[in-house]
Structure formats: C-alpha cells, structure tokens
Image 1 (cartoon, helix red, strand yellow):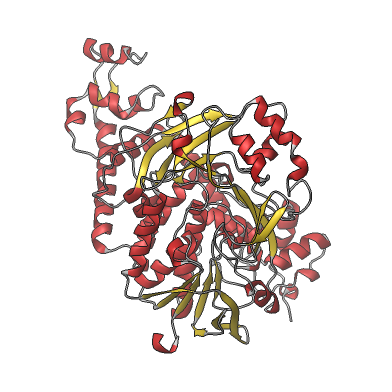
Image 2: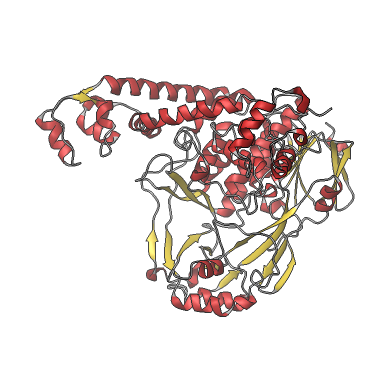
Length: 627
C-alpha cells in the first residue's frame, strides 16, 4: 500500500452508516482504506429521524455489535433516551430504541475513523470506476484524480444522481445542503450494471422554542436502561422525553386541498417510496377514513434547537408545510428551520450481487446500504459491515461470509435483497423472518460473536466475557430446573399478588413457564435466587429460554427441515433454458438470480414448489449444465 501514490487496499465510497461500518471493519482487519465522502462534516449523519433501533432494527444493531461493528457502541455513547418497545409482548418482537444526539453521534463516529491509522479520509466525489477486464482496480474523482485499490465498496446512500423535491420545485442534491453524486451511475451502466430509482423523504425541522409542549402528551424513556452493545461499562446519561401530538381535521383538509402541488401526485417523481414509512399526504389519501394520525416530537440534540417532527414527511411546498404544521396541537406558532422534502435517487437492484454483496459482473466491487434498495440506518450498517468483511476476504482469497436466514436478521435481510426483485425501499420487519423467535435481540451475541471472534473483529478479552456470560446462562438454567418452590402459605401469599396459586411444590423452571410468572417474581419466592449476582441480560435470557422452550424447539426443527434444501447445491454452470416443465418466466428469474441452493431458489418470488421439485430431480442429470 502506497497512499502517497494514491494506492490503497480498499476504497469505500460514502461515509454514511454503511460506509463507516465497512471502513472500520476493513481497517481493524489490517487493510489500508480510503474513505471518500461528499462532506467530511456529515460522517454517519442521521438525515432523517435522530434514532437508532426499533422493531427488528434493534436486532440488527445487536448483530452488528456481536460481529465487531460499532453502531451499538456509538448509540450507547450518545443517546438522549432509551426505551424498550413491545415489552409486554413476546421476546421475538421486543425491541430497544434510542433517541440519539445527532451531532454527538457524528462526532463520535468521526473520531473513531480519524483516530484509526489505517483509514485515510477524503472529501471528494467519485465519478468513475476503473476495471481491468472483469476486475476492479480503482476509481476517479470529479477532479480527475485516480485512486488504485484491489476492492471498492459503494455505499452512496441517497446521493447517487439524487434530486430533491419541495412542491413543484426540484434541484440536484443527495440531501438538503449536500451535492448529489453525479457521474458514477453512468460508469456503472458502462460496466453492465443496472440502476433504478427509489424515493424517500424527511419531515421539517422546527425550532423547539416555538413549540407548546403543554398541549402534547409526554413520552419518557425507560427508568431502567437497556443498551445495544455487549461491551461493558456503558455510560449512564441524563435522558430526555419525546412528545406526542396528532393531526387534525384541519390538517387533512389543508393536505387534500393542495395535492395538486405534490410532485408525487403530479408524476414528477418516478421512484417508488417506502411502503412502511409513507409521507403524510400518502397517509391522508390511503387511509381516508382515519380521522387522525400520531405525530411524535423528537429532540435532535442538546446543542441545537432543531426538533424532528416524526410522521410528518412531505414534499408539499413550503407555504403549505407551514399551514400543515401550524394545524397541529402545540405547533400553532411553529417556526421551520429546515423544510421537509422528498429525494429521488439511483440504486442498484441487489439481485445483481451475490450473498457476499459483491457484484456478479465485476470482481472486487461491493455494494452496501441504500444503494442496494434498502431504507434505514440499521439495515445500511449491517450491509456495510458484511461488505467490508467480504472485501477483506476477497483480497485475501478467504471464504466469503454469507450469513444464513436461520442465523440472523442480517442474513435474512441480504437473502431477501439478492433473491427477490425489490420494488420499494426495503425495511427489516420481524415478520420477514420465519425464525424470529430464534433470532432475538437478546441472543445476538450467542449467534454471531463466535464468527466475529474468528474473523478478528472481536478481541480475546471481549470473547472471554461472552463465554463467561454463556456459562452463567447455562448454570442458571440448570439450577432453576433443580430448584424446588414449596407450596406453602408464604409462597401462595406472594403468588396471589400475581393471580397465581400452586397446590403442590414444583420446580422453579416449571413455575417460570406460567405466563404471569417472571424471573423477578422468582426472586421474591426464593432467597437463593434473590442473592445471585446475575446481570439483567443473563436472567432475562434464562427466562426466555425456559418460558418459550417448546416454541424454540419447534423453530429449531423448522431450521433443520429447511436445511435439507440448503444441502442441495446448484452447479454454477447450470443451463436453466434446457430444463423442461418449468415456465419461461421461472427460467428467466432463475437465470437472473442464479441461486446457489434449492432453498435459495425456493425463496425467489414467482418460483413455485413444483418448480423446486423438478429442479431437485433434474439436478442429478449432467445434461443440464452449460457446455
């Protein structure tokens, strides 16, 4: 590596959440990395809501941490509020969410990058990729400067040919106040890589001094804090509330009266928007019978008056935005600091990549984040980490890390992207995983930390802590299976508070299986349990393992069944056109995605079970391989 002559091991294009994870992983593994960004002041920026986590997303953050990524660490260091969502529901859908101090988050991440001697940060716009045959060898920026590298990771977010819309006005930009990345899409097209367009948006930012919080409902965080990172000694910070207001009939009338000024409804935006995070005008039109919608008021940080209006994304004109906002209770005198806007941008459908996130056409070219058609900081960070790990593996000739659906939400996310033709920005949901009871946020370390340690991203000290935690979990599980709770007056007096009663003595593990009984109640019943010095993480996981034992075993059986199809490998040189009794449409889909196993083929949209049965038989006939 010769940085003086612009020669690096790896180039990462884009310093958002995907780019930061990719860069730091590669640097930690000993690679010399050039990190190119349009604005060095916007590293790991949260351009939409200032929050990390939430349903399914919190599991991604925990998985990133277990593999050796940094999103969990940075979030824990810069939170304004921590809150466990769905705490009264089953463990598969419980989720941690943090309000972040946006500026502090960016500063913390930038410090991690700038303090790493293997990372070279540069503000520039990459406009062209350099190849030698089918292999990447470098890139060129807007000034014509060439940079050489063995691998390149594209994490361009919404910047690729980005265009912002406010009403019927539009201009070139990836985010408000930041230029678009122009030229790189043309370079991708020349390499035979297809791009399409997607759309996203963000609400206005309002001066908190012009908000009347007394007209809103306070939304505090948790008193007992939970954290994202599995690292110890996480900071205890002062927390701050969010607030809840609602749209009114006046709000809806203003929006309906101005739909002719919406670039979406006038056909100026061609990209498809996020299905699960629609604009407020979309909500009003699609859910016309709903008289009101929740709007959350979230602080952006301690060093600013900017306040985020969650649930109020729009691309309507500025004068209409003012009227809309001032129709909300508590925002009658709101002053807008930054307008809401929509942004349309290019992305690269991920069916053009393998599960390693490397291009099928160009060796050494990787993609991560919104460029793959996803939405969300957490989805981006997870992909960036995997792309970074595999860029390192590619250079070193090592086996690619391709996580399975049964191992992680990260594996599910990537498998969905590369096997399904995604039409709108993909958001991770618990419902997307058929194994969500196995893939909980509490056991992400159990599932993935051994992989992170083997890769070299988890150090020996942290791995020793992990093994000690697993030992404590197993010891406590065994202890509760042996501990007997007597059926006496004292026991039933305590149980009566929770509408429970026992007529005979029973094992603590058996009692814990009851819906109303928690580990905290066991502490009331048994002094030895109360005196144990176990962490919250340990006893919560023990409770889940015991209480949901039957359901967990059932999903483990499902994983075993699915694994049978995973064992059927599809030859790389198979010629799908020569297989009879399969429709032309199915053949085209199989040829486009080229799944590695029958299990992957079965997950491709439009491929029927009958097609899989035919493939299973035909795979044994060598006549179907390309000559």
